[in-house]
Image (cartoon, rainbow, N blue to C red; front, side, top):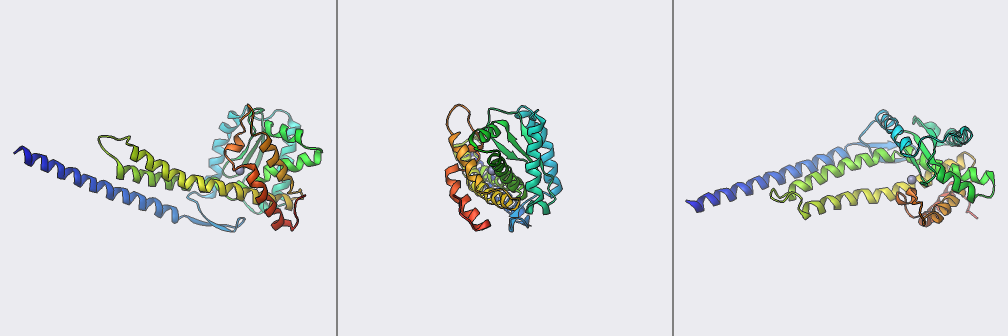
Length: 286
Ligand SMILES: [Zn+2]
């Protein structure tokens, strides 16, 4: 009598395990299907990309996160001349380049943060630079013209992230990752041990695989677009290399440059920038 009860119990366990694996496969299939069903052509990068939100949604998303980003970096820089200067550089880059032919809602904000060396873009068009990075560029440049070209280099890179829709692309990939890791959790989920090492490892592995690879490519693509926009707007694109040197020398010390942790090593990027300059204007950098 007792033996039979145990056998039935075991069978029920196996069958619910089978349902879990079926559900996991279903979720993974759905995640992959939604992801690969969202292909769009980007006229600026001339590439097909996977994006799950509309341009309007993307712009709204950026505008919604804007106040928080400003707040996290001690607000907007109060010196109106500096703010106006960044605006003029940004407008010149957008109005005199391929970025002009897009519907993105660009804005250029200098942030009051004098500790964190950084620049970034939000989905849909808002771009930012911190005073810490601006001051480093001023200190390391030998003329106003050179400093302006380097500021333009940073902003052109960020405009590149916007028009290449890297945030929306990352969002679509994140949804894919969550769909797949949800599936992985279900498949290896042990009811008696929900935080099993196997479950955690599967999530981490899938997450890293998708996110790390694309992050690096995005940065290099933003550099290439940055070089193109700089050249089109009449800035010397070789000055983007100067920005990399500033970032690299800021690598050590107490002020941890966030820009470095979210970007590939500046030294690795210099060669790629030189290649892009050669491709865009047919010249080599000094
Ligand atoms: Zn970047």
